Image 1 (cartoon, one colour):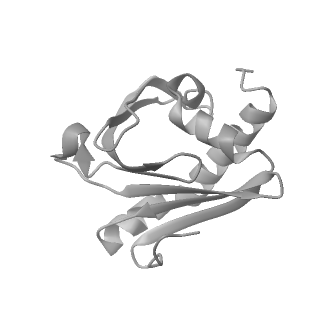
Image 2 (cartoon, one colour):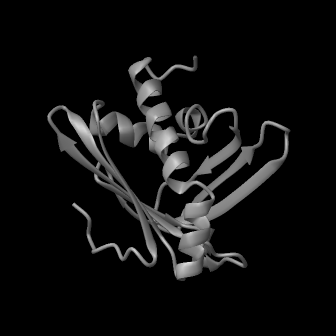
Length: 161
């Protein structure tokens, strides 16, 4: 259930049916202790993560490259519908403060399906060039990899390997 029609000029979409329940997908997306185990494609890791799960609340993470270089990402939540929809952006910082370097807004949509989840992630960009840049950075492979990592993590009992 996409609340708008994605525009292929500006948006990237990843859809998958995964065999884990919606409630567990929601839990690992909204709990820093879980997020750090699957959120970035290995061998990258998540050095730090902060979640203030409310509209205007902070969503920040620091990705760590295999070489040890840190890549901070800061933004805020726009919409939170438990077990259905999570929308966040780096266009705004916590408290709806404008970001000096906006890149995209993300919509995570979850739908129960046969005991599993229809998982849809949409990266919404303001410009065609930004969408293209995100695609060339490996959006589909990267986001696809983390969905697999997330599913494996949930199936392993949500404990680190």
